[in-house]
Length: 134
Image 1 (cartoon, rainbow, N blue to C red):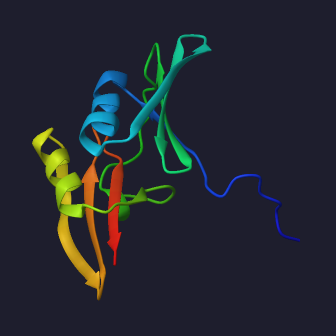
Image 2: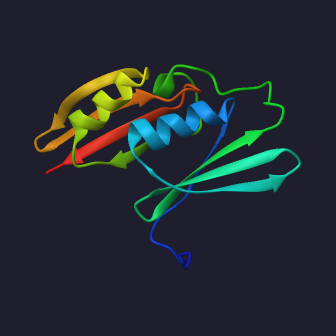
């Protein structure tokens, strides 16, 4: 039996160590639309940014968790290792991220005819893949 969806996309929650750095990356460098800041209680705030019909939710705790995902992106471990945002201007978004100090893990390149990607590391080491398909 298939699940009955009420939305055509998923939302992504990212727990970060420095909310200001993460917000600057996703809002200013990537260019996602800031929606709101929510007080989640117990010293946790959530910044919601729109990404198409999805939301990227940045969660910051008053005391950052000690544990973190292993570094190294796709090859660094199992579990959620990256997510993909489809964009029109692959070169432009990659350059904005690099100009903001983000590490470009994979420079823009064609992976198959008509489809190109770039991968950038956010301030917490999470990998964001940008995809452009023609």
